[in-house]
Length: 221
Length: 262
Image 1 (cartoon, rainbow over the protein chains, first blue to last red):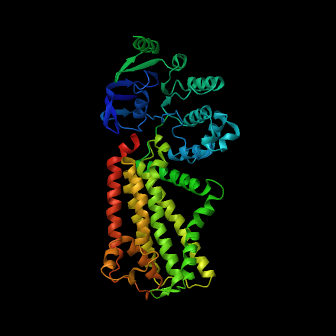
Image 2 (image 1 turned 60 degrees about the vertical axis):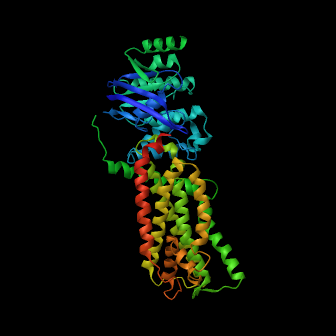
Image 3 (image 1 turned 180 degrees about the vertical axis):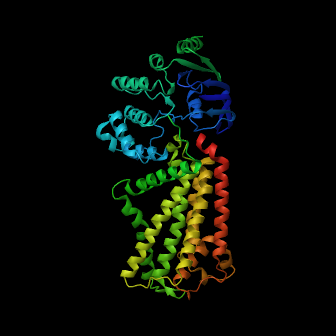
């Protein structure tokens, strides 16, 4: 379960504090519920994911994580360009305290990512699709209760998406997913509930379809 | 499924270990023969200066072998400078890794200091071995003072890095200032000039620089009869180290969130 209570967040700009990205966001994500985040560009979706992932802290309000939450995967974050895929994978294993069973986990990542010999090449030579594959494989190698995905599936090809879909279906009975995507079909495929971020506030919908409907209406108006 | 919650200490230890291996790989294996250059760069610098010195026929500085005098001085100063520079850039170089909430900015700085201290120890040992092969007397008369001086210089470098790694993140222009400072620091730390031979009152002014005390103590450890400044004090060096490290850690604590959030 993840509790987000009255969270406010703004960033510092060159001209002092910026405008509030999130102002008074509250919701509770129950256990094992897959949630899709929708909202226009700049509505604060990635910010909210970073806050939930514990990388950043809110200016006001609090976030409680009563479970193991993954790091937000997406946009090449968490991968060091100068290191190879394997070295990055080892780094993550060590940071998460899984040094003793590192070999098995890395074998899993290598197998799942299917990027072949590139696994031993520096990450900066990867395409965005390859990065997504690696990030996805890296997070799946650990038992989180909630996985956070920031458009990570959007750059993958059809084969990878179906594989990711299958992997998440397998996890569905023991883990949840919080994802941002601009693709309706992806959201409907993966998520049951939805959060619509609009003007700094979050609106919870038990059905992702309703969240998408509200979002669509807001941009049409 | 049982949930094992790791203690804060064990999380930090595993983050340090992962970062240390990452830093070392990055430093020693990035590019062709990177590790050769890491070791050779300061040695070539020393050799060049030695060539300049011996060309003007200086064989004796303040009562000790000029070759040893210059080598120890330069390696001791580089220990400070490289630690300070590497630490200052630690946070920006590891930004991608803050995606994992286990990794805090201060961890990257501490780990870089450890890596650099270790590498400079190797450089010092290598340099002394070369001097020994060339027939110089390289055994320090007072090894503990030598270690004390080097540790002090490393700590000042670490403190400097802790302070300025935050400074650079908050105000990017600070990075340029640090680069500017390093040049005069090199000349005013008595690396190439014998501070003990400089007349008063300038000598006392130069002695305000804590690096002078570290560099001169390291030389004095090799030859007790070395003519240095009168009020040489490792305590002064360590006072600076203490203040800088404390200030640096305080800044890291105060600005940890802001450094990560941008």
